[in-house]
Image (tube, rainbow, N blue to C red; front, side):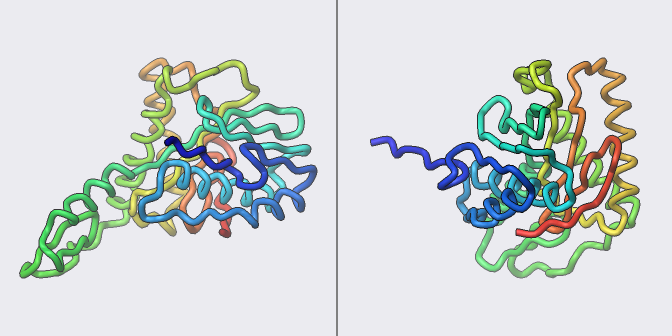
Length: 233
């Protein structure tokens, strides 16, 4: 027997609406956004989009009336004042992290993962690898985030392109790469590399706004504003 899928925004159904920031924040705050260990993509999406919308509402970056509706293509349709926005969601570094966890699950009891997903087995010296240089950290972060954006930029992924006023991408940073306090420097490098890749590949369907979310901060609007906003669950 197939179990009916629960509404994405709980008691608000698959669409959450608000007439001002105070009402939106109040509604978002009562949602359960915990991600269980065996969480599915919808748990990750709910966690990300709620933190994202909270950050935007808190800093007056939304227009009203506002609504966010869960869909499939695109992942979310946002109506912000008179603008209709397609919002796609993705995770950067998820495959790298999952591969490391899979290796750990197959290893002997007592094994641990240190550094950048480096498996240390039982009886081996459990020492952290030499710390990355600042340049290495920022470069690796840019590489993983860029790969994620490139994967979502493929034409077949941008369903309905052209039927919305704007097309935005929200990337959840699951890379595990420590990038603070150089986040703005890394963001500038990432924006340049992204533009170079888009131009070299004649990419015509581009996300007009790309933001990168972590548990601690939101890097809002990679291309233009490039602001670092606080987030709160």
